[in-house]
Length: 169
Image (cartoon, rainbow, N blue to C red; front, top):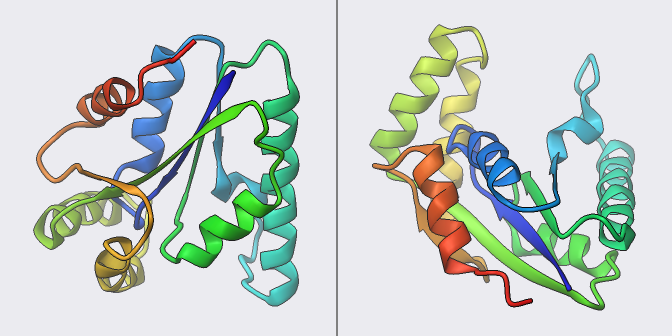
């Protein structure tokens, strides 16, 4: 039985960094960042592009689930509404797959500090800060395991998640 880790969190919380560490620590693993499925210029959010990205994500995740050499699938994306998680899950064939739903959360101060570094480095634009801070409370409402990463590194977050969900094979 393989494992699928669906890891959500607001922009800047450390999803990608945590998942990259998990990919390296877990046996026979693959990592997909949902943002890769619509990395376009200019970035356009329309009904058509939202449907396209969901199709892209679910196609890749289903292929990973079916692949006999993959034991651990690590996926991250900004999943701030239960509807997003439910839409993804409804399109996946998870028979024989253990699914773990996780939200990385952090304090507003920790998020401000992380995003300020990214903005200063030119990785993100300033408008991300307001949107990310506004989404923090939404994660508490989700049917996910919450992992507070306010005071821990991506390495520590990955270790914690792996310990919380040990391989049951």
